[in-house]
Length: 155
Image (cartoon, rainbow, N blue to C red; front, side):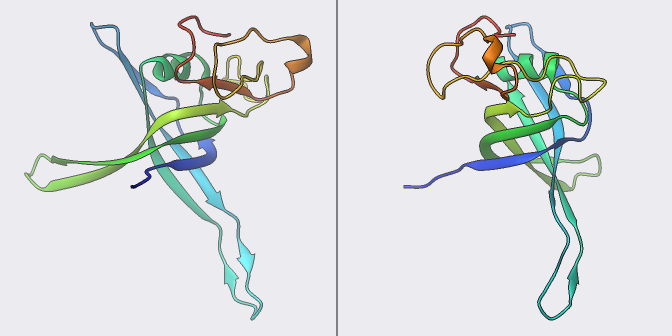
């Protein structure tokens, strides 16, 4: 048995690029930055801050949600799978790219905190089950959307 699961908490590095296809499917791509804080070892050695950039791919329903609500600077919690693919560049050299394919996402940026952002915080949804409309008491919770939820957007 094997497991391929990635959990990331980071900031969107650029506005997502979204492509819609004739068959009605969609794919969104964007970068996500995760940062390990700087620290000092017990012997006095300083370890600098380190930022990793991740290539994120969201498809179909996730792509539509990303298109409408995710913007540069937003803080996201993502769960997904690592996939590596290869391609030949213009000179014929083999290149490899590692991507994270989204299975689950929560938008953590408070509503109005990112001037370029749309609606980013209005509901909390259980891990499984249909999408529920937000209630006033849920306004301060992070927005959570499950990939297998109903067809209507919950926003």
